[in-house]
Image 1: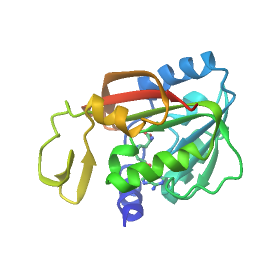
Image 2: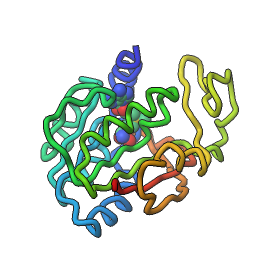
Image 3: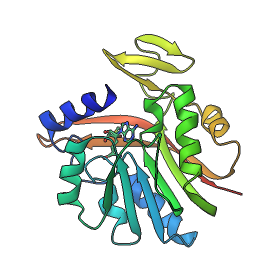
Image 4: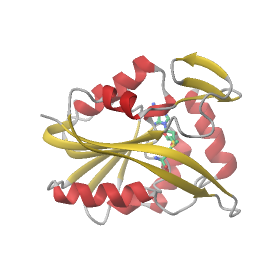
Length: 208
Ligand SMILES: C[S@@+](CC[C@H](N)C(=O)[O-])C[C@H]1O[C@@H](n2cnc3c(N)ncnc32)[C@H](O)[C@@H]1O
C-alpha cells in the first residue's frame, strides 16, 4: 500500500523534491567525517537526491522500497549501491559506521518508528553515529486533519505523519548518546520550480 503510494508519486512527478540535496545532508557529512565514518547506510534513499552528496566522501548503500525511485537513483547516483526492500526489515549482513535517514521516521506509527530505529541499530557498528530528520511539531501541518496517535495526523487525505517535539525525538533515541539536535527549515523545489517548505528536526546520536 505504502509502496504503491510512493511508486505512483515517483511515476507521476519524477524527481519530486528536485536535485539539490537537503542542507542536512551536508551537515551530516561534516559530522560523520568528524566521527571517522567511512561507510554509510541511507534507509529510504528515494531517487538519490541526498545519497549523491554522500557518495564522493563515503562508501554508501541505500535501502528503498520503491522500484521507480531506485531506477532513477541508479542513474542519478551510480556510486551508491541501492537495495530494494523495506527499511523496517533490512537484511544486510554487515554494519555501517554511519546512518543518515531523511524524513522517513515520521511516516510511521509509533510501533514502526521504534522498529525502524531498532533495525538501523542492528546495522550500526559499536560507536557508530546516526543522523535522522523528521517533521517538527512547529510545522504548520501539525494538528491538521484526523489524529491517529499522539502527535500523528492524517494531514492530507490518505497520508499521515508524526510531528516531533524536541522531547519526543529525544525519547525515541533514549538508548543512545545524543550528540546534537536542532531545527531546520527545508525549502523544496520540484522540477517546475514550485517551492514549498517544511520545518524539520534533526538528531545526531552515537551508540554506546
Ligand atoms: C519522504 S521520502 C524521502 C526520500 C529521500 N530521503 C529524499 O529526500 O530524497 C521517503 C522515502 O522513503 C521511501 N520509503 C517509504 N517507506 C519505506 C520503507 N518502509 N522502507 C524503505 N523506504 C521507504 C519512499 O519510497 C520515499 O522514497
